Length: 92
Image 1: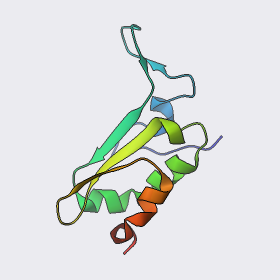
Image 2: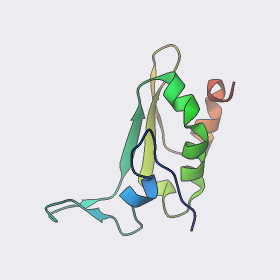
Image 3: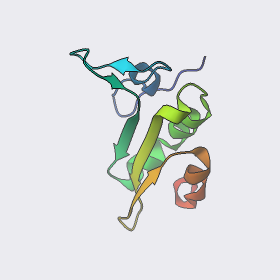
Image 4: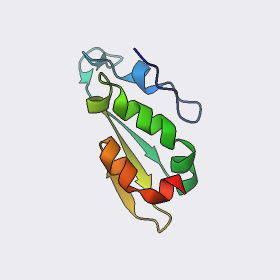
């Protein structure tokens, strides 16, 4: 099992989402999906490799997505590696 590091001091994605889900503090519900939001293009660029690793982790890939803002200010939801790779500006 690989490890997906945290974003900007946040816990790693793997610690937030496990294959069987994560219980809320009250135990009344199960978290099945985590969506990280990067509010700046610079933050997205700085974390692009960590996002790629999340999508290649078989246990994590279907339980995580990312909201990123393009340099033009457009909000895009990324749900897989192909969508991430299509954002060429992240790799410039």
